[in-house]
Each structure stands twice: as structure tokens, then as C-alpha cells.
Length: 463
Image (cartoon, rainbow, N blue to C red; front, side):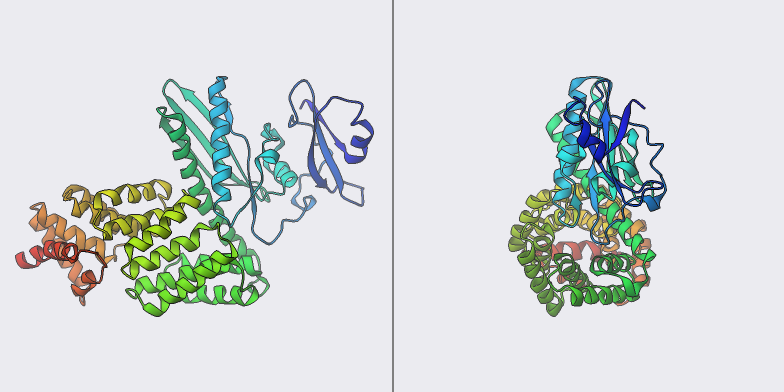
């Protein structure tokens, strides 16, 4: 490659005698040299500060890289490449990368390398491991943007720099209408996906460490892994990990948020257990004291208020969560639920659709789809209600609410035979079902509960 790598000692001798721009790659352990050597790279021929160089003398084995900290990982977003040579494509590529940096910083649990550092590496031929080592980043985000007429195509990937493994990649094709809204849309989608992919990778990483050696951060990730199994046993194990992390660091916002989520999840399963909801509020408010710019406590306070039958108050908390982190899919779904409880089904639908866009593979997607199906029922879009309820059931066949809604929508559509078959499945899966489970849903107007129950009763009467 057209460039040269030098040591810091050499750089001190030549820095005032050359016009070359140097980029610091960090420390490396080199053969036959006892101490780590600071390595810098100089570009030539107008290739800029991040031009590639020959690294034949730098070992590529993992053992020669500085160890990665056990705490929260750092992630760096490299400047995206604009293909085609058009200036506006390059500007848009940089803009999307900047939006991702901003969005990731709002997740709070990830350390994000500043643009001023990561944008030095416009030439990614150095390799993600070298760049990650130089930036101190465990994960690297890179991408390319191409434009054809009125369409753009963005290819994005996430790489684990510790082993060079490709964690995630995806292609986004969009019509080019409004550049700024397009940037916001794509940027928020990518941020939401990266948030979950890094979380998943970090959960898996904890299994490389004996459980008795896990530190607070790793305890939280291991607990999240068990929570995502969604079984009673795994949920109990998750609480053990979160409690242990809390004993180690009772002021950690990460720990407080996971405990708040755990008690919220149990309250939801128990149809609004008041003791659990009080714990959610206590933990979430303490988490806010630790980090007032974290969207998660606001979202959990809002979700708790929804279950308490206070959707207007919930909407205030959720609006704050979305303001802090527009890519927070859970907050958007909960905001949709708040609108639904307030009687605004039309206003709720965009929030549920945003959640689908931001988190298309979410573990709790079945719930969001169930809420969306309910919204379609209230606006009497029966085909959409049936199709959406089916999608929810494909993800979680035992979710009673989605099947309940589907049965009512089938009856209102005149598809009585299908409704009868679904009712038979429903009664087999939920023999102890009572309409009180629907009356428990805290709609501000009880007529909404009666509307849903009435749809379902049509099928029971016809049976």
C-alpha cells in the first residue's frame, strides 16, 4: 500500500521536517522488542491521514493487541463510503454515519467513539482489528452508500474487532424523496438494530468467563441472556444475576434499569401486581438520579403508569424517553399503548408501526403486534386486524390476547367458520379464560373493553 508506519520515537524526529499527516494507531507488541511500541501511520500521494500502509512488521495474532476491558464495550462508526463519485452521495454518507454516532450515544449503555477520532479512518483497508485497536473500540460500524436515479442503497455492517467476526450486516434500499427525513429514518433503524446486536454479542461473550468471575457489567449481560429465554426458570436465574450485580454496585444505572425491567415484566405477567410496580418506580427513579439522560427509566415509569391505569401520565414519561432516544422501540410501542388506552387508536397505529420498523426481530414483538391488532379493531379495519393478530400468533402461539382479537375480527368480517375453529383452539389453550382479563385492560373509556368483549361473544354465541 502507498504509505508508511513508524514508531513514536521516529515521529518525534521527523514531525517538523515533513508535511505528511500522521494518524496514531495505538500501542503494539512487536517481535524482539520488550515494551509496546506506539505506532503511527503517514499517508503519501494525497491520500490523507488514514492512507493504508504496509504492516508486514506488525503481528496480526490476537495476543499482540492490547487487552479489551471487561466493562461496557466501545463502538466506533467509521465514515461511510459514497460510491459513484457524486458529492451529494458523499455528504449523505457522512450525514448518516453522524446520525448513527449521535443515536448510539443516546442509548447510554454503549461507549461511543467521537466522530473526530473515528472519521480519521476513511481508508478502511487498514482492517477493522487495527482500527479497533487504535480507537480502543470493540465494535466497528462501517458502510457504503450508492445512488441510482431516485433511489439509494446503503450496505452496513458491524464487526467485532477482537476476533474480526462479522456480527451483523444488512442492506437498506430506499426511495430518495426527502433527504433529511430519509437520513432520520435509516439512521434510527440502524441505531435500534446495532443496540440489540451489540447487546446480543455481549451476552454471548459472558459465557467465555466462569460465572464466579463475572463482574457487574458481565452479570447484567448474563442476566439479560436468561431474560431473553422467556421461561420461568430462566427469569428466576436472571433475577439472581441482577441481584448479585446490585450487591456489587447498587448505584449502577445499568443494574437499576435491568431490575426495573425485571419487575415490570413480572407485573405484566401478573396483570399489574402493585408491589412489583412500586419496585419498578423506585428502581427507575434511582436510575434517573444516576443518569438523567437515560431514556430507559422514563420508559419504565411510563410503562408502570400504563399498568396503573394512568395513560396520560404515562405519555409524559414516554415522550421524554423518545425525545432522549428516538430509536428506543420499547418506548414507542408503550406510547402507542398509552394512546390506545386514551381512546386514540388512529394516533396509536404510527407508534406501533415505528416499533416494527425499528425492531423487526424484537423478542417481544408479539406484544407490539397484539397492540397493533387491537388498534386496527378499534378503527374497524378487520382484514388488517386479522393479519396482524396472525403475525403475533406466529411469534407466540400462546399469546391469548392476539387470538382473542383475531376471533372477534373474524366474526365482524363474516368469516364465522374460521372464527369457530380459532375459538376451539382458544378454549383448548386457555380453558380458564375469563372476560375479566379483558376488563383488566385500563382503557379510560370502559366502552372499549365492552367493544372487544362483544366481538368475541359473537363467536361464543354462534358456537
